[in-house]
Image (cartoon, rainbow, N blue to C red; front, side, top):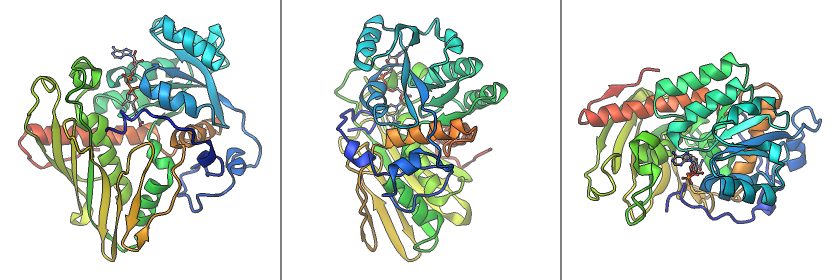
Length: 383
Ligand code: NAD
């Protein structure tokens, strides 16, 4: 099952409390430093809790973000933006949201006048990320935008430009930068703990076949593309944060379409290679028709290896290195992510996962599509 389609939310309060926030871009050294210390920020002063409005009350907002916002210290659920009046009623009573903090997609711009809301979190199908990010920026609200940031790199850049022009910050919902297994991979790779990385493998797949045909993820106009956009981005991210560097070129191939009823519009699967300096290659794959549901991030280095499997799910991550099993708790990563982003915004600092990182990833993804359309031709990425 896809990480994005794994909507079970358990009570991870006990894991969140006691876990550190990722602040200031530093890799976490001890997963168990005081939660309160982290929530208070570097100065030690308590931060004002920032109000977040969720735009789009689909499964990710309902099952992950809203429950996570019940656990956060630096931000809270202050408002909602929805096209569905019946959902608004449910959310208002469940989360005690005043009528004045409920918007629809048409009157959304009035949020500019609402002092309860500091941050707009865009959780819509991908094709609407740019419009709502730009409208939020024009309303002078900071923005968190879900992954992938946009349907093209140009659109992603326009989002960054709009936030800069309006003096607000933009961060991407890259939750894995806030949890210990993936942070350990960043340390192992970037600090060369087992020597230089020699090769990387990453796979993120799910099985959409058998489900509904009428879903935005299968509609290119709303999704921008298929599994590469939705899941493959985790492989792109994983390889890049293992290396701590941008790839220089890609080669890609679309897989065969074995379920044509589902994949009329978007690709069923893609395999690609990302080439880094010194000839390091990341072999990656993604699919919407893989009953195995792969969730892998692994690397071979000069003096050892590591593997996260599953690497990208909300829960149940597991990791191993050539020296043994990784021992980290699973944390409420969305809560830690939003607390960290709210802390950065309140200090007028960039998040550790800023809009520019989203633009970079869109450039990589667009190069992968270009190579796949050109039968695996090597495409150098223009940053
Ligand atoms: P979803 O289909 O469950 O919800 C989408 C929401 O958008 C619904 O409330 C729907 O009513 C609304 N919407 C407004 N206009 C729409 C339209 N024209 N077509 C379809 N829906 C429309 O999707 P989701 O799984 O919640 O995903 C939303 C966003 O969150 C996507 O960008 C996705 O990539 C991202 N996401 C991220 C993670 C993560 O782990 N970071 C996980 C899941 C989803």
